[in-house]
Length: 434
Ligand SMILES: *Cc1c(COP(=O)(O)O)cnc(C)c1O
Image 1 (cartoon, rainbow, N blue to C red):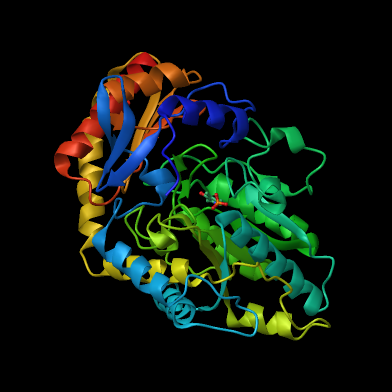
Image 2: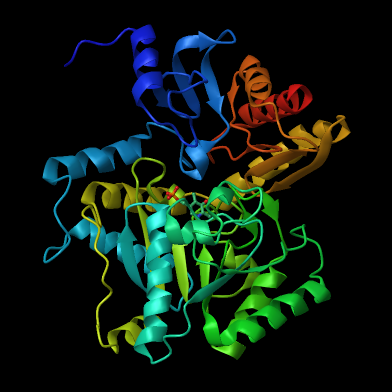
C-alpha cells in the first residue's frame, strides 16, 4: 500500500492536476474529500460545517439507487473479480455480459431486443445516433441524418449528444456553430399531470412532418428533463412523438439514462406513456452507481435494417465494451431492485419529499417546487449562490449539488423517512440562503 497522503497535500495536488466536472484548471473551489461511503452516508476525511458524515441527496448523480457499499453488489463485484475483471468483447463473450443483455431485453419495452453495451451514457447516445443514421443509410435513405429534439434537454457531453442538448443557457452553448445543427422544438409545457396542450402537440407534429425527409430520429428524455433544467412534462407528448414518428418514417430514441430503473415511479419513464421507442439508452443507475456502464437497445427492425446495408455491421466497439465486472454488478443491481417493492419505496420518498419541500414554496426567491417519484426540485428565480447553498445544506448534514437556478435531490431508494425529511430541510435551507 502506498503511504497515505496528508489531507492538505491531497487537496493541493487535486487543485493543481485534476479536472473536475465543469471545473476550471487549476481548481478554485475546494472539493470535500470523501473517505468512504455506506448506506446513504458519505464519510468525510475532515468535517465540513461541523459534519463528518453527510446524508447523500444526490445518489451520485442518479446512480447509487441502493446506497453505497451494499453487501449484494459488493459480493457480485468480488465474485466476478476473482474470475476476471475484464476481457475484450471482440471474438470473446462472457456470462455477465450475456445475462445482463438478456435481463435488459426482458425488463424494457417488448420491441427492444438487441443490446449494445457501452461504457458511459454519452457513448450510448453516440451509439444510438449512429444506429439511426446507419439504419437510414442502409435502407437507401442517406439524406435522413439530422436529429430533432425539444429544448431544455440534456444527452451528454460528447459531440453528438452535445448537439441535442439545450442550445441556450445550457452547458454547451460555447459550441454553437461547431456542432452539427439539429432541429429544436419548443420546451414541452411543464407539469407531469397537466393535460397535454393541443397547440404544443400540433407544433411537434408540424416540425416532424416538415423535416421528415432529413430526419433520422427524434431523441428526447421521457417525462423528466434532467441536467437541462429538472423539469417534468406530460407523458402525452411522448405518444404524440411516437405517432408522428410512425406517420413520417422517423425513428424515436428515448434517453432513459436518468429516468431508468424506477426513479420516476415507473421502471422506465416510457411506461407512463405506454409507448415503446425504436432505440433506448440506459446508464447511470444501471450498475447501482458502482461502475461506469451504459447500454443502447434497439428493435429488430432497426438491427435488420443496419444488417441490410453495404456495411452490414455496426462499426462501434469500445475497448472496455461489456466489461464483465460492471456487467456482473449491473445484473446484481437490477436483480436487487426487482426483488423488492421498489415502487413503494419511490412513492414513499415522493410523499416524504412533497411534505418536506413544501415550506420552500413560501420562501422569497423561489419560483417553483416540484416532486415526481424520488426526485425533488426547488427552482429559484435567480441563479443559485452555489457556495452559500452548499454550506447551508452541509450545516444540515446533507450533500446536494445545486446548478443554475436549481436545488434538487434524488435520494437513494433506501433512504429512510427521517433522512428524507432531513434532505428536504437541507434543500429548504439551501433555497433560503442560496
Ligand atoms: C447523464 C446523462 C447522460 C450522459 O451520461 P454520462 O454517463 O454522464 O456520459 C445522457 N443523457 C441523460 C439523460 C443523462 O442524464
